[in-house]
Length: 139
Image 1 (cartoon, rainbow, N blue to C red):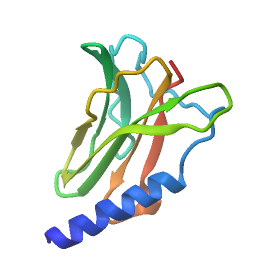
Image 2: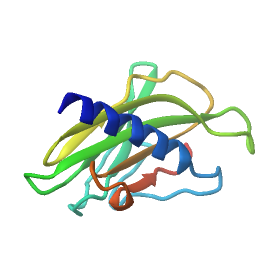
Image 3: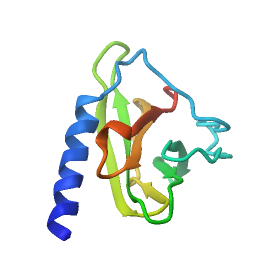
């Protein structure tokens, strides 16, 4: 079982990298305010709610997803940074959780003056085609 979960986490990392959004693509999650960290997540099965919170001198990315109690669920959250407008987005920190039922993941703190956005991919761990990716707007 552990080997299968490790394989799923590796596959999810590859899927997330392949699904990287261009700098112009942003998607806000329902009810979230990325700049303040204040979030009221809508309960939509297998759709991540993503936001950032200030932590000391930096920010952490947080994502949570609602799922059926017996479903093996994966949620991966990333804090991405961009040095200059038009340059590529780079993952500065990430966290992945695989569990049954609803899940939450929190990145380590990122301290930077660069432009930031937080992205999350979540859904059924064994069904990559049903996983959903969403991002905050750049801040």
